[in-house]
Image 1: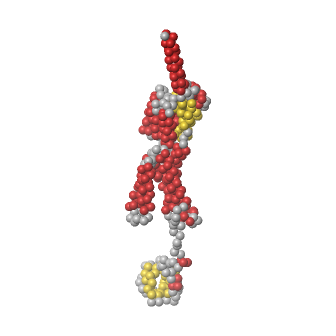
Image 2: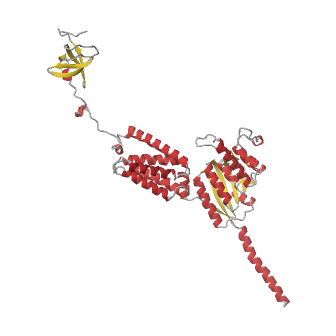
Image 3: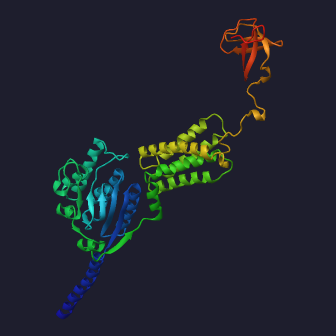
Length: 444
């Protein structure tokens, strides 16, 4: 009986071991989701990261690994990404593979661990405006607070994060005296606690983070996300709107439907596609745009102008609310309008006579004299004829010539009534006379 009881205990221990070991192995071999942050930080990147983070959480990943090599980007996009990282329950590891400057440094500071390649750098995070100049005091102060908060959220000394964005802090020992922004090398970052270690490859990072046995699942951006990142770039938006404006204006005044219309509609389609994928525009903005376009086209049929004005307002409104930033979209629309006007002028001036599509834009008919059009009768047959002044010519007046009253002007001199005058010049309706003496000579 005791022997049977002993076997029972052995059986339970073995069974427990067999149940525990697979679960330990599964935990040790958990998945790490690798997401790449490259090129410019903008709103399109946020949607890609959001999808990657959601997939990692849904599949119970052990951690998220961000491979970073970016020169920076837009503050609002970086802020959204930082918030996304803070709200994620999974551990986040940042591997700066080349550089994490500006907005890239801000994103890296939100990670739980940071590793850098030997030649990588992090910093140079001053906020600038769209013209490339230093931002105003209000925007700069807010950004400095965000940089400090990002460092503190991961237990790092905020002094160095602030120095990355404020050149008034003296950190000469790290090549950042007053007047220069702080940029940390891999060695510097490890020394000040901004890096857990230096690694050349992702595999080395995994080992240093005690994730060497984990499976790496790379999250690649979809074609739609790649296209959306390009289309939503603040430089590309005004280009698309400019092409759309020129194409649609030319198409409206051209017979049939051709290349300009296709270019215009394609540009608008790309604009709304990219901004919809990026999460900026909804179907309601597209519907408003289509309604506005229909009303604008109806203006060619319905007189009055009100329909066209309403259509234009709806189109502008849909574009303004489709962008990542209301202000930036306003600038983009203004730029597109200017480019459209200048482009139309250039096209009509240099190519209007050659291109058939401008036939309805350019007035080609002319009222030429050779075709029988005259603004006034040019009575050149009167030249040399002599008449008599009926009124004083001061210098304009009336003469009588072959029983016909004719309005004339002198060369500038005064001629009294009842004097003989000779018609010396006819310029359209302007008939010039000169006084003659009784013997037929000119009066000097």
